[in-house]
Length: 202
Length: 202
DNA sequence: TGACTTATGGCACACTGTGACAGAAAGGTT
DNA sequence: AACCTTTCTGTCACAGTGTGCCATAAGTCA
Image (cartoon, rainbow over all chains, first blue to last red; front, side, top):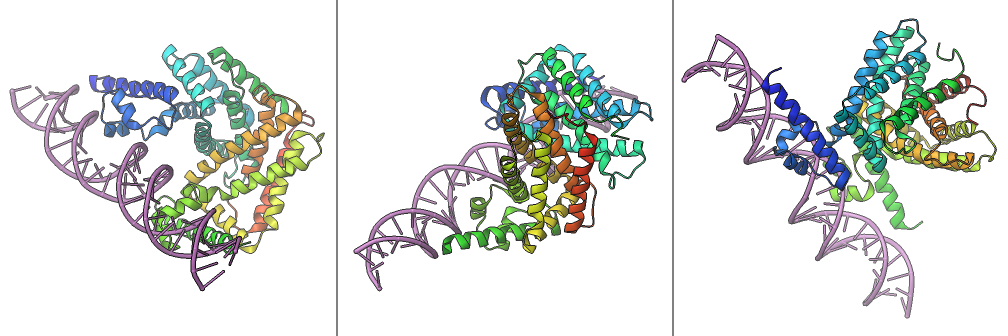
């Protein structure tokens, strides 16, 4: 990896970290791009070359999680029931989180605190989730051999799976440690699996 | 009702109708507030006195639906299982839709077409849905006698109910008639009810 | 070194959204 | 009718977001 790319990645993380701290200090809305750019000594114009906007900073994890889920899904045996697959994909995201560097773990926990404090960001998160839902629905529809535009069950399966994930991550305000998140997420998955009728997703 | 209020309501609907048509004609993003205001001959400033922004126009139905659901929920017997209640609340929204004036029905169908054509608006819709989910979770938590900040099952119940609603409304692209929407919605509710274990929500 | 590719900063611009203020319209009173 | 009060409206000013364009600076490679 050349100097150029290393420098870019460094700037990228510097922006992200500065932004997260500013958001937590003075709130999301009241933090301007100009302030973020100022904190890492770049021009506001350059900020937009790294991120599409303030929102993007909050959704980095969602981007990553979606990638992981699609990967995990592709790796599952084709005859595995769809909801089971999706739960495995959820666990894959969780596993990735646990194997993250301390820096990334800290970023994730900061993000979680941010979501707890700013309901608007939960909305943002949900909007991004809708996008992921569409992508997952494509894959699950293909697995089930149905047309994603016609089959409601496919969408219901994906929506339930995403709900499970969201509830595990967002819902009960926790003390903000990684193990706590792990527990909550596992609890949510167990709850969902126990709530559904066997074979409902076939 | 005085002249003043009648006039306001007229302007309100004029803005809404003009906006929906413009959105469908030239797309959501490429329609500016200035154009909408121009179409109904008001100043852009006045637009913001009727609606908080372009988004608000798309979310009027969601506002209404949330009100209906909260009302319906309050009217259900206190010992009814939570998910059953929520499904009844969903049906209440559907019933309201069916008893709507032809004008309102047309607005709703235009909105649906809009959502089909603009994925970003689906995200918007999901963000608004997250807000409704929080409100519903408060009510359901109270019903179940638990702390909404601690109980995951409450959030899962609400999330599943909202998923059911969303899938019924958004998912399979239909031909755009009111009876079609009714069928899809009923199908989605039936699907959800059949998928869950009896007593899972207690 | 010199020629190249790419990143950056500055500028102009369109759009959204809000506060402040002055004038117009509606409502009520005598 | 004339009057005052309340509410709505338009104009102006302003901060913030986000994008296209172009010159310049920094990195890459021969």
